[in-house]
Amino acid sequence: MKKNSSVVVDLLLLLLAITVLATPAFSDLVLSKVERRIDVTSQIARVTKTLKVVNSGSESVSEFTLTFPKFLSNNLAYLSVSHSEGKGKAKRSLANLSVKEAHPKGMPDLISFYSVSLPKPLSKGDTLTLEVVAAFTNVLQPFPEKITQRDIHLVMLQESAQYLSPYVVESQSLSIKLPNARIESYTKLENSKVQGSEIKYGPYKNLAQYSYAPIVVHFESKAAFAVAERLVREIEVSHWGNVQVTEHYNLVHRGAQLKGEFSRLEYQDRPNPQGVSAFRHLLARLPPRAHSIYYRDDIGNISTSQMQSDSKKTELLIEPRFPLFGGWKTFFTIGYGLPLSDFLFASEGKRFLDISFGSPMIDLVTEKLIVQVVLPEGSKDISVTTPFAVKQSHEIKYSHLDIAGRPVVVLEKNNVVPDHNQKIQVYYKFSNINLLSEPLMLITGFFVLFIPCIIYTRADFSISKSSAAYLAKLQWDEVLATLQEVQNIIQKCLAAHDKLEASLRDLSRTGDIQTCKAARKSTDSLLKDLSKELRPLLASLQSFPSASQISPKVEELVAKERELQEKLMAKHTTVVEGYEKKSSGRDIENRIASQQQKIIALRQEVDDLLEFIDEI
Image (cartoon, rainbow, N blue to C red):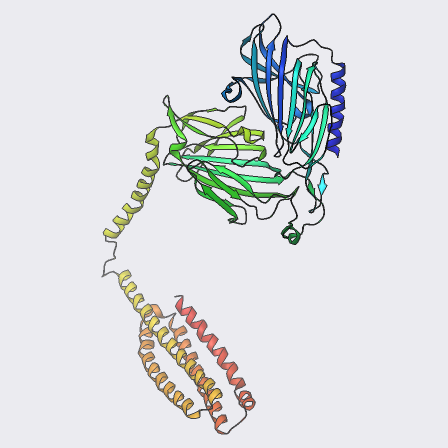
């Protein structure tokens, strides 16, 4: 209610200022006919005015003055004025005229003035038709400001049924196009009527200077009040054939805030889903040959998107991870590639990038837009042409294989609407020789890498076979080979131990004593053979002087393994005898409990010694 109250106060002050305004006319211009059309079918209020200007004075006039109430001009996002010729279908708009803000002396602060430079001085009795297009943000105020999930979304528009102008108006009419025919209330004046989803005021005849008749329209709006608090568009130009566009959105729903808790069940209820004040998706119109399109956020890729493309456009319908109610925010990134040939051209010895400035999102309001145009390394003499005022700066970006870095043109603008989505041109000079810099760097890098490798593989760095170092190396290689054989034999012994343990498990399961004894006999035979193989290896190790520190560990390993054999055989004998005497399972477990603990400890010691030897 604070915003609405402040606007009402502004209206009252404006009426007071107009009442006491007693300044002479800016010139002898007269507006013979004024047609105003206000479109509020989206969150942006788009005002289109057709002004038929007549010079009733004796002197020629070269400037025309536009006026707006201060509370509207504070939210003015876009303003363009052009002059037109012809009528009806033959009517055509010519070039846009220069518009700049004016500050005439003696005028009240609650009125904003803009000076329009006419294409040529308007002589006595001459007529000129002007087309004025203005886009306002934040003028559709949610009322009420907080609603529940079940409520419809209502907004309020405050305007004037009469055209505020420093000139006399002979005839004026106003039409307000609403999203639908659901109108809660509107200000009823003379010659006002409702036709479906449109409210009409006028025509009003012979209006004095600074005429003003405040009106308020309260109506339902299902439009997405999507506002990008911050949008960063990075446009990276590669002369290898691609323009990569990456857009980072910080999005908020600026409609009536959600009051109470959110219910997913009620939101998805059929056939009467609730939550009409939330928006589920956004539509982006990309250039026709956009490719490699992605849509993701901090979590990862978002698959709830659809794409349709033809020869004229590519449409991307994206759906956030959750429905956005008033006051809710989300963050996401979309990216896509564009063919370089569609956007890069040459003119007067320079190249120039011709690409859209604003967001491709339909009816999106952007509070702060940052466009970063990343040019190829080596670009110079950079200049930018924009159809409207923007803040410019320059940066350097370093990427792979860059030396001096890539020049970046940074363009910033606040309060951006789709009307700003016009072409901008970034001019720069670039030599084709710079294209070879990165391939040459790669070739040089591979050359520097492989030449030493070639030299290394072809040169003979071997030590003389008669030297002590060479003989020591050969001896050490023999030691390592012997250690490997010892490890292999010990591993076979441990495998035999595991097989013996498995025979005991089978005995407890089947009770087949003979099979268990046969397994014992087979294991005994295998362990004896392996023990014979170990003897010459141990003797060989003891004969090597370089193995003097290793031999004790190997002998300890063999001793521990033999002790482990003995414990396993004793355990096996105890278990088999228990089954032959038909002892109970608990009795057998009690007999072998101490043996089992020793077996586990010995097995751990053997594993530790094997690990130590393996690290040599």
